[in-house]
Length: 509
Figure 1 (cartoon, rainbow, N blue to C red):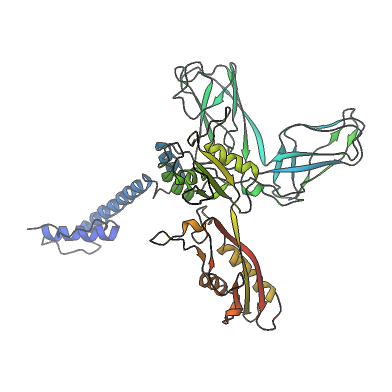
Figure 2 (figure 1 turned 30 degrees about the vertical axis):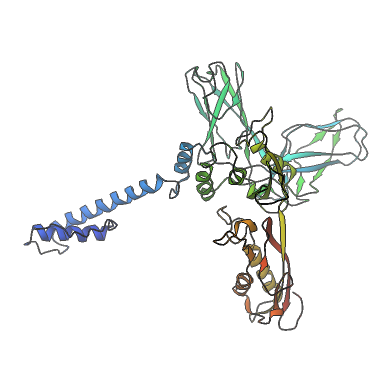
């Protein structure tokens, strides 16, 4: 007599399914047990078994999910899985900005501001603070009494530990979020240098490694005396915390400088500050979804950059890069043989700064002081350039719903289009609608990149404040035409102008 049906469903592992299967088993073994009423004590045991089975299945499913990069949900497990393949997620980057310091009057003596001096925005509850990294001096008699210096959205920290003299010592830094590569530990025997691993360290090398956990706190690990020297005495660790996109403040918003100041002779002076330009370079830590996308891709590069795709994948290891396109003579006849042009789109759009382009180039081209993590071949020539943006201009005639002010409706449309053309989604992964034209091809490999007019029309029509969008071809135009906008291979689309005509009276809103 069969105990259970042959067609077992191994996905039926919840409480109800386990109880139903167990009842089938009971009926097949004990035909006389027909009372499955709740009051029967045997049914209490049945519920207990189903409950335990449900819990065990839940934990097994979660353990299976947490053991794979594609399905993991907890960041600490994701970091551990990435460690197995040699991928280290990037932490937050600190924004920087040039700040102008101005005295009320020419000083009698030099006025010196020391590293660590704080300047901030004027917010009362949560000001965004920046610190001076190098000394700033306004010379005596300067007229105008001004000086400019770069400040960083970070905070300097210092922790002190005592070496036990044992191998493989590790120390958890007290503060976070830790800014990558900022730790400088100094022991009684000198300053220690950060390395990726101790594989190439001998017993005299003053090296250390850093492991950053899911809470963005860093643990410093030192050698065992064979691979990496064991530090002795007191260990003082200077490092920085902070960073993130919140530091990318607008011009004129860094306008507070706490404290009182004097010149070299002790005369009090008054200082004001301002940032003429917008701060830049602040990037949040890589999200789980970004890591899940990038970590497996880096397996194909194997620590070098040879194929065209290698350059694109490895460029994205810089968290300030949102998109990258590599072109060689195979994709662009204008590019010379054994050379390539790498176009990079920074997070937030716009042209990449020279510092970012230099940092991206440093991923592939080694220097005597900074070996490249993913080097290209020695004879390969690489240029990192601004993306070729294709501005998409919009003209539309719309009718708003009753009670909606035209200005409010127009703002909602512009917000919807900004969302449509965004480079990255909220989780940090690429917006699939927007990309270089090269990445849109048909089955035959032909470029089919375009901004579909219908998709843009739907994005506007779906705005809750919009009642109707004009139906005539002249009522909805992209770059002056009622057609899709083609994207050339090297072009990257962006939102251009948005002209909105009120369908009621023909006025611009």
